[in-house]
Image (tube, rainbow, N blue to C red; front, side, top):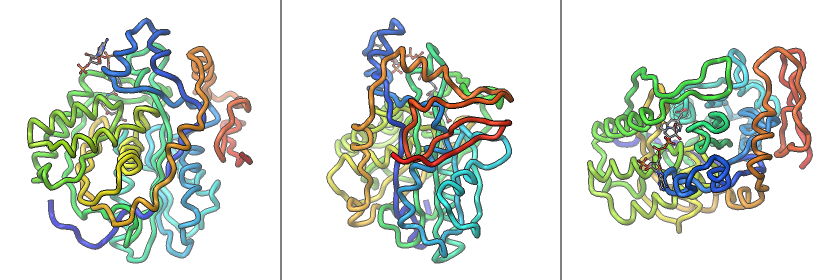
Length: 385
Ligand code: HMG
């Protein structure tokens, strides 16, 4: 990788996930599966349960709302939503978020889609935008509902939530390198046709491709594990990250320190599940919130099915620990639901059809909700918590 140019990166970061979760041991029992398969074989403990009043827009707006105090309307030039659970095939979900947050009108607003890679595409585009527009700020939101279907192989890897990042010069958290290593190729490992909200996956093939893409970009990057204070992976479920770390150990020497930091990076994902576009960044938050403050270069591997794999680096900024959100408090405040309640919430989904629909107020949470769909238009509202 080429050396860094400029000093641009993540100045602020925040996270949101809805107020409900499922214990995957209880899910395993209900599905007639050994709970160890889910907790050890897949590497998950809890899974976010997403009521139909929460979607990529409301969760993204909730995460970004925590950054409003740091946004300068004169400097904000770009708002990007990276998502693969977009609510409209035409209009960018970022425009709904733009309205809910009352952001200035003199900004570019768009949505980026490439499966789980969409958040990284947004972040690196924001970095380039700030490089081209010195002094500017860019808001990047990664927000998704990971949904595979009841009693499917992918069910244990569901989840959802959002991470928002403010990108600027002289960042307070992570200074991003100016270059990266990327590999893109059209493959059919995971996809979601526009007429359904449930993803289709060739599960085993997707895990193999993830590892292939990782090995390819790692090899091409010229990076050495010894130069990294931590290596972060896209985490569809935490065992996938462990498999990637094992692949790295075949390619390079992996120190005990890197292994310990990997464990810190998966703590939040074990409790939330897959956030698709936001998963890599939940891993970043987990690492930074769960480890004593440290310094050095981080390597981040982003994978989006379909597929794009990109490896990029960033350098931690001294004092970053003062600017982290309290993710543990958010996760601890959630209510556990039974498997039966989760199934009822799951089935009460916004229909993929033209009929009017109202979401269930019993499950309203967070600062923004989808109240329903009227005349094929989604109705969003701010609520007092
Ligand atoms: P499966 O068929 O349920 O699982 O599918 P399995 O039978 O392969 O078992 C999983 C692991 O549990 C295995 O370990 C078993 O040995 C172990 P491994 O061989 O992997 O090391 N196991 C046990 N361990 C302890 N005690 C036991 C026990 N029994 C079994 N009793 C799969 C798993 C992940 C494939 C499935 O859940 C799935 O299809 N998920 C969705 C797809 C996915 O997440 N793919 C990941 C790579 S692609 C990606 O990351 C992109 C993505 O985020 C989407 C995007 O980009 O937008 C998905």
